[in-house]
Length: 566
Image (cartoon, rainbow, N blue to C red):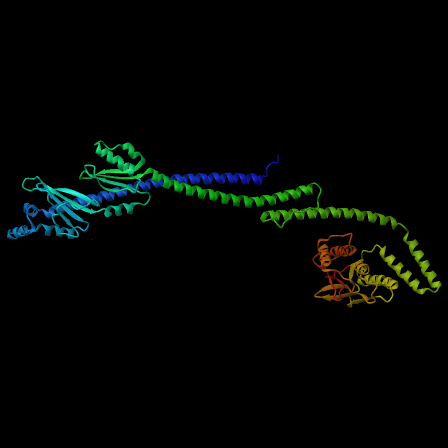
């Protein structure tokens, strides 16, 4: 089995850590949310209990105050009792005859001005079946034959005490709208539906707020009161609740179903789980996509190195799809491989050149004097036969040969031009009336010292690569001039020239000192360039190549003149 790369192992490790961290975080958030929900529900129950108890106690207090306002003394009680036993006209006449006029219905009417929440009163006496009913529609009230339906109201009751005997005289019933309590409950209902029961001391449900989730609790309460047995605390285990006994003996129960709490928390769990899962998927996608692309780039680098190791030394890393540090590494590796190939090629070329030098050394072992004497014999024979042109050609060739095998390393510009002129003369003899040349040398520059064979390879390049013998206007020019303390030697022709791509290649080889045995033109240029760099030093010497104005090729050499012995 192939071993996983370090990058893949890191990706899988990071993915596992990422999943574990998000899961732990989700569990912690879920647990904190659960505790927060329970605390919030308990606070909700506490607030409802507190406010309903306060309102209930407030109405009980108001009822006591109302009794005191209606019946501050025995005379007022007697007035109320007379109202029950007499018709209104007799009662009114009776009250007019008393020293202090007291009208019971008028006293009741005034209560509505003091207490805004009152919906109505019902008063009953122990000694009669008659009742008194007052409402906001009929504030002075009346004595109906039967009690009106007040089942839709919250009722508070309190006995009326006879001041003389301190015995119950009757009861007063205050009823208010349930909406007062509904508003309180709904204002505090922030999390789950609450369950509220207000039970009288006898077990009757005076008020309930039950949206259907408290039916079990309501049935249990009803059964317990009917059987006169205490409330079973076990039933409350499924609720978060408060049970408060009020001052008048009534019981307030406020509860919240734990199942509702769980369902609300579960919805939060589901949301957190979905969010965590989505986050994991997104992060894993980004992780694998980002590091996967990085891993692909690394594998490409490793694959290329493996192919190079197996012998495919020309293979290179594709850098188009590399980024950041991998791009830098890939470029460095490619440059290293290119340098290694160049070094290997140069060593190989040096070996070939060394073999060629050895062969030429063997060939040059022929005695030079034998060649000179033979050529001189041929020249004199041509003169004796009257073939003077052949004699001149042989003399010129002999002079070139003598200059080639001389051991001098430097020469003057005048001698180099003289040597070049003889070289051109030989080509003119081969192709008469097709080649022209011009040497344009400024004064006082003939004695400038230059390396031997500086111009001859440049002229030779023209005859090898640039001249077109089908034309009759072939021309080459050598110009020497001075500009800004620098001496310039320009060799230009009107030959075939080179393409922009070849020109760029020649410039690169000059810059990198790269020899190309398959390209004699660049070999000659590079050879001259390297010798001039050594002779004039890098800082003082430059060689530039370009297209000539006549469409041919141009070489420009510039340097600062140095004194040198010839």
